[in-house]
Image 1 (tube, rainbow, N blue to C red):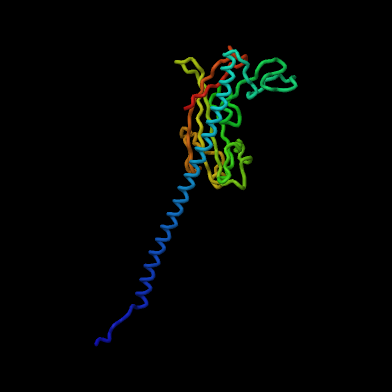
Image 2 (image 1 turned 90 degrees about the vertical axis):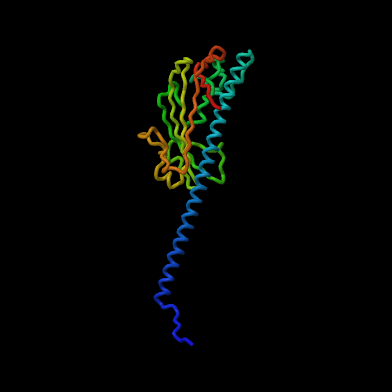
Length: 251
């Protein structure tokens, strides 16, 4: 019978324990990175959905305002009395009130600016590289696009209850389209969703002017660019004063 059987030495146990520890640490690190990547992907999906939600709301409002203008125009063409109660007032300063049908002159005011859904300040007629960037806080679990108010000042957007922030950049240029002879307004919209940390660090910055205004992805969870056009039409033959009506070209 052999009596020289030996167990593991302390050194061997320590080496084995060290190898197992390194393996467990690697597994834990992989798990941590996997969870972090999963969370980042979920944030990116949420941010993309928010952009889609708000951009769809903006486009729906553009369509709504244009349909109101069109209804007034069609009624005027048909000889019916159009309802101007929805559009902007244009009464002179000495008029006691400013409804769309001016009681002082009997003339309607100006048509709705279909671009007002996209901007804080109005895109001017004959816009030449009009820029505007605005922001709004987002509470993910209480998101109502109709209650989102964009502001061009970072301090006015900051909200301690915000889960995320959405930033919107608007660029607009108006130029003559030679084939049609119409003035055409081209609007480029860039939406970006940021975390509070990103918003604190970068504020309204979402594009790089030195790189053809491309989105700076590191400044946001997600970005999306939309571009559409509108031609400028003259409806004054049927509605006095309506010489600059923006007709959007939307799908």
